[in-house]
Amino acid sequence: MQFDYKYRVRVSDLWQASMYYAYSSYMGIVNVVCIIAAIVLIVSRWKGASDILRTFMVVFLLLFTVIQPVLIYLRAGASLKGGCPLLELTFSQAGVTVISDGQKQFIKWQEVLSIVKKPTILVVYIKGGAGYILRNSVLKDTRNGLYDFVFRMIKESK
Image (cartoon, rainbow, N blue to C red; front, side, top):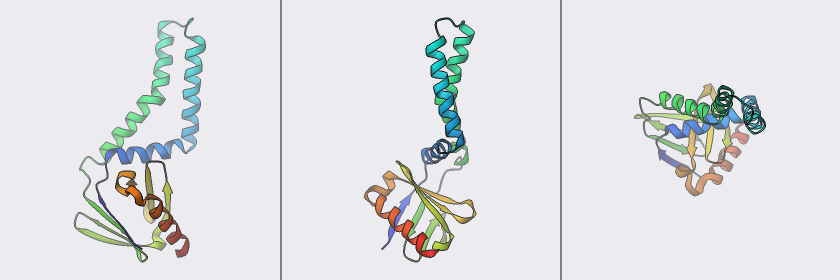
């Protein structure tokens, strides 16, 4: 069995991975609590609040719902400012072959740490802090098959 993909990582892919990571950590809990607190403040205190306090409440809500995601997007864009070369990933029984910028790398299954399934992306984590993001538009109808295959190969290699 073999899965072949050829694509370019987009800023939105890095942004999605960062947002999923942020909201599945303690930071996500803090963000949700702050969003709820901002909404409760606005609903309960709006009528009696001064213009300065109303402005503060709106900015507080926007901080977690708009400003933070925009900053994460800008950071993702900065990390890809040189552009992303075409990636060719091949997942086979032997391991993962990566071709990028004319360079070929082979990764054994023992070096693959995990695969994470999120609603719009799959992330394959490699030892040394590397990883590969595959969006649904790249995976198409092979999403579940690739996830099951990689999960099985990681388990068998341990």
